[in-house]
Length: 77
Image (tube, rainbow, N blue to C red):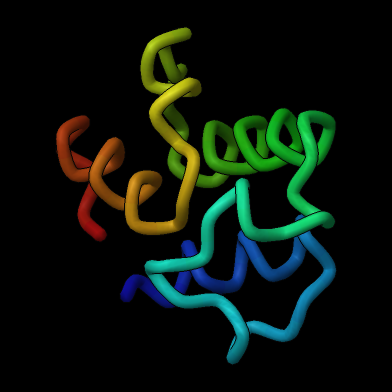
């Protein structure tokens, strides 16, 4: 797992980084609501200097999915 993504998700969701794994998903966490999802999207865009598409934003329902979207964009993760 990419340390930058792990730390970014932990910061946005206000969770310990050690609790963030690729399997952590929006549907499983009360803290990861629609508002936090948009905060996470903005944080990913700013951190990796990219502009995500609507479809990519919808796909990012888990930490693993975030990594996949970034890989497809050619961002080293």
